[in-house]
Length: 368
Ligand SMILES: Cc1cc2nc3c(=O)[nH]c(=O)nc-3n(C[C@H](O)[C@H](O)[C@H](O)COP(=O)(O)OP(=O)(O)OC[C@H]3O[C@@H](n4cnc5c(N)ncnc54)[C@H](O)[C@@H]3O)c2cc1C
Image (cartoon, rainbow, N blue to C red; front, side, top):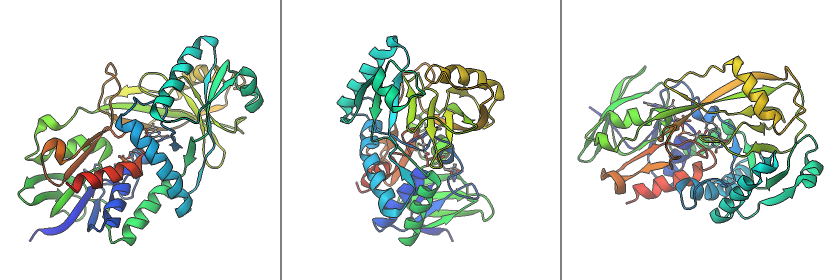
């Protein structure tokens, strides 16, 4: 006999867990299927842990709207649930006068997105705030912060479980089929089985396209391409001379090699953007040279031998290197016509910041 559950969420990253929490709180019976032996071992533990303000994204895009809404939800959530976080603020720096027009454009984009707390700082004001920085001008974003992503996921999972959700580790979804009254899933791993569910949320991150592609009855033309953009980090030995996050003017595919601080005050630099064909999380030590170059544009005082390879994450992009940046793709029944199914594609940054707002949207999409 095929076991049955009301709702399945595939993937226990920050987004899958936020969705599972929201569905469980809304009264659904939820099972989370995770192929790894623990939660959050893919994109959600390989990022900058920044709570983004919502500055750069095209106005009206899902990224802009969900980042703005999700950021405030996230601050409130972290405060009420005791998840470690800090509203540190960030500086976006024009290190040369010729970058000032780019900074003005960023300010205009932020205003259009409703991020209206940015402060324009001249060279002297930046110097007073962060004496080690070289800047002709900067934008201060007071609502940018950092969060303990592991603590956040633990809290999402704990709350989902408190509302009756269950999680099965080492349970990869290997295929499935769309039926008249829901979905049949083939689950591999230690306890291979077949499972029926009425609602299905595909939050498999880097594997979301493969999961959707293996769902018999789902039109292959609805599955977007997957492009992998690796981002490596280098860590700083010794104390960081900055109190805020420091970002250069953005580059194509990412936000530029920026400085983020973790909750213990340690500094890391990255991520860069490297288009790759396969998942490979090694950080190439020889990339250090390009990091020194990029960082010294805004921090000339960075000494030789101070950077060591850290870790890497991979962005699940649905647009390629030569395409314009794509938006999040939240594909519900109103898009593909399959009742009870939501696919989440291209959930790169600011997916962590937006996780609670993304989850609300998924729940609303399944209510139709
Ligand atoms: C370099 C980098 C920096 C970033 N920085 C930030 C930042 O500072 N701020 C921010 O807001 N966002 C940031 N992001 C984006 C953010 O990290 C992601 O949007 C978010 O973590 C995505 O979560 P997820 O749950 O969709 O994916 P994941 O965390 O990857 O979770 C997917 C899960 O699905 C599981 N899975 C896969 N296939 C299957 C299967 N077939 N069956 C069962 N389980 C399966 C995987 O094991 C995994 O646990 C960054 C991303 C990157 C790559």
